[in-house]
Image (cartoon, rainbow, N blue to C red; front, side, top):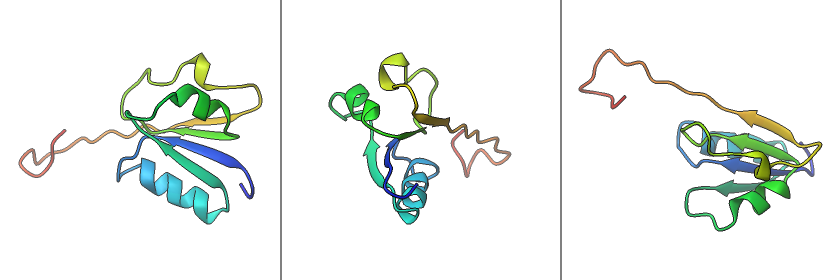
Length: 88
């Protein structure tokens, strides 16, 4: 990842921010995008690596990617037994 431009779509404490920190540790230049990011498709197209941790399906379409990019979609599900402690 050294010297690569990376975009993390999603800024959650569970997936988005830890993914950004791991990429920074590997010496990538990281941009974190969220729902208020202006023109997110153009930001994503500039990256060499895209990690999608948006929390819902269908956020990223074909306009976000370019040929040769590395793309990774993160899936996280919370299946809780104690509904009083967790919102699922």
